[in-house]
Length: 99
Image (tube, rainbow, N blue to C red):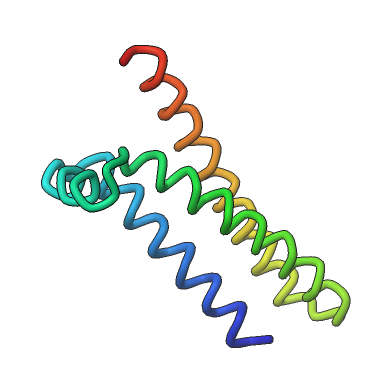
């Protein structure tokens, strides 16, 4: 269970780097757009949604073990992933309205 939690923490950090680079690095934006033929913000939105679901499922699993530190860590991870989902969703909505 501990390895799965640390894997989710690592995926959350990598998601942050992906979203940051898709906002502020034009070469990265062009590279991802050429590979997937879609805007990286759409991929960031999908990855954020998937990590939110994984965080919720893992939070339910961890809270059944009565491990307070793990539960707090998963709550923080869930809040961070929800923030990523909210920010990428708002940016994607604004981008789709003005494109």
